Amino acid sequence: MVHDFFGRTRLEGYPKLMLVLAAVTLTACGQGASRPNNTQSATTATKARPSGNALSINEHAIVTAIANLPVNTTYPNFVPAKTAGVNSGAGCPSTLNLDRSATLTSNEAVVLENSINADLSAKNSSFVRYFDRALLDMPSNGFAQLFGQNFGSTISGSYTLADVSTEPLASDGSLANSVSSACGSSVMRASWRIVFCSPNTAVNACDPGITTTELAIDRNGQWLIWYLGSGLQ
Image 1 (cartoon, rainbow, N blue to C red):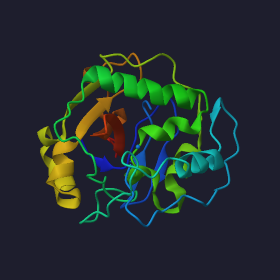
Image 2: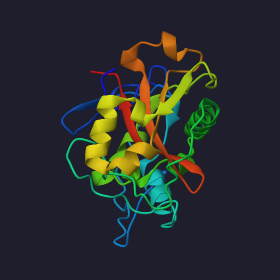
Image 3: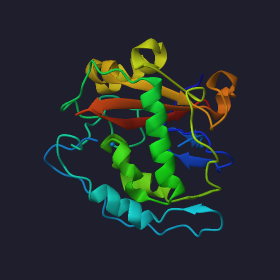
Image 4: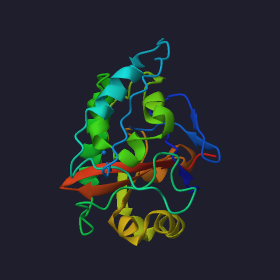
């Protein structure tokens, strides 16, 4: 699988989106946080794109939801990456209250993805609570621009254990090395990789080109997604 930092696969027919790091393609197959003292709030409300299909989330609502997340031990500031290329967002997760011994089970990942999908399907911007500020504080409110897009039709069905798999990031050599170099070994060892396809499509039967890869960390008992990637390219 090709690991494109900050890509995301398709949520059933969702259009492809482009984010620039080197040039990273992202689509969505399914659809938390870091801050030290100099708090960086998302204040620029970008203009919402015109809606024409079933799902449209107003970018201003997302910017507001991000800004309203508490600056505390669950949502502290991001940490700048030591090397380029790991993240087209703000950088790396803070290690504050990071549980390096936590295990992300497939059952927990299914609940996480279904919770995000439920908020997205309901056009509820509170889905940002499941993401780390390493993603939320993307330059120029990129996260809001990304999820403020009109994705088209909502996902039909819910994720099951067949659609989702998890493993320690340390099990993935190339991605683990990149994260370790950019964010440190503590973040690498605390990160779990989630791989999934659209509902009712078993991971082992999913085309690698439309498989979503996410990295999640446990902070204060809450799993937060800090990286989005895919097999696209």
